[in-house]
Length: 89
Figure 1 (cartoon, rainbow, N blue to C red):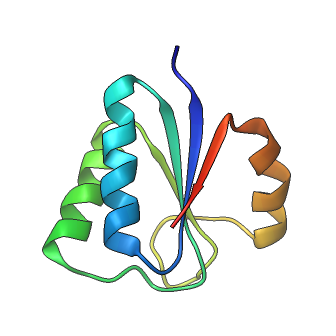
Figure 2: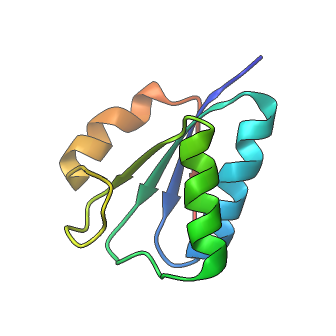
C-alpha cells in the first residue's frame, strides 16, 4: 500500500534527494522539504530534482533563494501530521 511520505532535507542534501527518488519506486506520494539552506547546485542534485518533478513529487522550501514552492516552518508543522512517514536528513 502506498504511503504519504515527507522527506525533510537540511544537512545531507544529496542523500536526502536520492532517498526521495527511491521512495517514488513504491508508488509512494512523496513531498520534499528543503529547509534552512540553499540547495547545493551539483549534477546529482539537479538530476534528482528533475527526476522528482517528473515523477510528480512535490518540492517545497522555506529558504527564499530556493526556486521551489515556498512554505513557512509553521505551515510545515501543520502539514506533517497528514503524512504516514516523515524522514529527516
